[in-house]
Each structure stands twice: as structure tokens, then as C-alpha cells.
Image 1 (cartoon, rainbow, N blue to C red):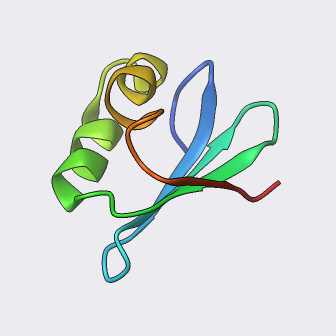
Image 2: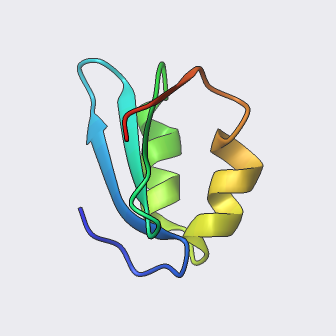
Image 3: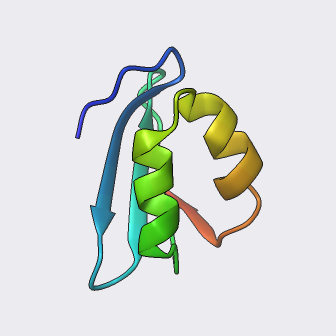
Length: 67
């Protein structure tokens, strides 16, 4: 889903795998493993997606660079 953010272009989530994919405005994409649904929902609803990402996701979940 596309989001309004100066840092993040889109957020996608697969609830069955608890896999969060984040695409940044730079075009880089990352997948984060074992992300609870509540974290995904809070991320989508956060006023500042970038601030939420840095505080609650980055360096807290196993990450894989996709592109």
C-alpha cells in the first residue's frame, strides 16, 4: 500500500507469514520477519512513518534487503 511519507513509499504485509515489506523513496526494498500484526497496524496508522520505522522496526526484526 502506498503511504504518505517523505522517507517511505509503501508498506506491504503478509499476515500469514508475519512478513513486512517496506519500500523507501530511494527505491530500496526490505523485508522484515516475524513482525506482529499490531506493529504493522501501528506503522500504517503512525503520523510519521519514518519516525515509527526507526523507533519500532529498524534493528528490531530480522531483515533482508530485496532491492
